[in-house]
Length: 431
Ligand SMILES: Cc1ncc(COP(=O)(O)O)c(C=O)c1O
Image (tube, rainbow, N blue to C red):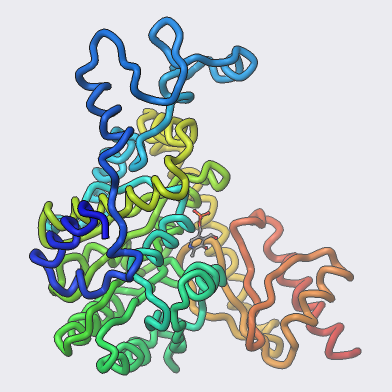
């Protein structure tokens, strides 16, 4: 094994043996080489006269560029577009995102966590975590209402054993006792990965205070039973809380909860700032101290260096500029208000008894989506019928559920959308 990897492992082991124990074989092998990038970073700091270290071309003290590209981007400095971003991302953006996390998640106050590391959006962040912590057969515990790509990221790529528990209990609340049972069943295995995604895709649900407290209690109990836990917070839809749920990520409450619990936050502007195609995201660890945080960060940098090498610099610059803009908060609020109005409209319409014979709706209070539970209709048949007959697109999930993205439907069209879905159900009943 590489010497630097051994040193990182030694640091992690001596600071927290449980975190060491949950590293996958690949996670143990990872390190960030002291190669060209380190030397170049040093040169950027100290080579005042000539810096001939990094693989870009320069002209007149600026990165070289083609005017056909640059003329459309004249607002930006060439240095913020063309040269490589560091593997961990632009430091200013990392700092700003870190400050924002603290502002938006009061429970992170006083917790020990690292500077967010920039990823190529959330899917990439999740796959890094899978590489670092999942060995074949490791149990991944998650609710049965889930983002389908977890299968590829954790199971297909890394061989995780996906174990789901029903998302809701009989009262439309989060089924924390199912979560507890699934986790405690891993006692003999000694390791589990818990994936929490709130606001949830596909249900649009985020826990309330009581449910959040129960989740924290379950995680503490599972750790006290001797199970090493990686708790992944997929906060893709963070901030879009419309009702009485908690208004922050559970990451702050799980961070530093117990030495056997390693909390990781995966988030980014993809959905929050409506920049899906930019491919910028963040990965934030909570751990005991700076030594272990740095060692984990270096492992992440190793995997970024060995896959992407570094993320897209222009995208990071665009996001940074937006976050620093004096108009940012007002514009963000405006979009939040639009989505909230749509969510409330959906609820108002669904509370109308006229759909009672066709479906129930699952509780929702946040995010981009909500789900209907069809009473008699096959979801896939309905999906195809709506598409063919009415030109209406919805997502058919398993078990008679359909997902509706109100994020994509104007408020004034929501009534018509549900009327058409209802009509589709009736058509199929008569067929
Ligand atoms: C729950 C959830 N997590 C992560 C992602 C991935 O986001 P990104 O586009 O930033 O990779 C999505 C995208 O649909 C999602 O719904």
